[in-house]
Length: 216
Ligand SMILES: [Zn+2]
Image 1 (cartoon, protein in one colour):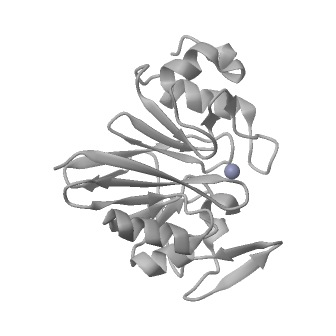
Image 2 (tube, helix red, strand yellow):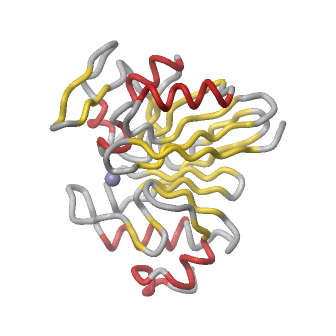
Image 3 (cartoon, protein in one colour):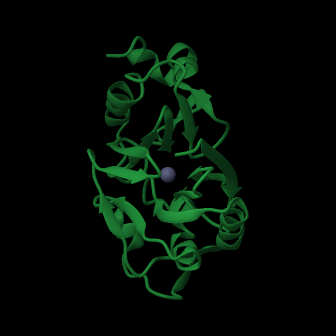
């Protein structure tokens, strides 16, 4: 078991943060939210020496899953998503790519479902799967040794949109209360867009989370 490394890779037109989470010694790890630019994600993974065990999708929006099919194919790894958001990946297949506006979307031929309570193990590390609805019904967050990959749940000083299909601001607040504000202040938050932050910083100054400040 080696040190964990987190590499952030902004991809696509919306500047989605794709992450490579891996054990530096064994190279085992995961790609989180390959929202676009499959070639760039796959090269970064190869360059980092990633032995990819899976591609984790925080939620089903195209700017987070748009390159899931192609990246899965190049890295020969399965794609994981929640059941509630899985329709975003349905109907894919080898080499199938669709055009959504100016976005090229590649869906994987198959995918596996994740739910709260699932644990993904690699090289002595564990990723806890948390259900964090609010931005979408099936939004998941992934917690690995004090590093929280939360998709579009919380951003630095902001939160994810809740006006899209399946969104609910009340649910988003409840997800933060249950799964983010229960973490220590120094836990790191790696959001789906924008810079990384900490639980302490968002607890003390995120204006959207004022109502739940102080935690549980
Ligand atoms: Zn989203």
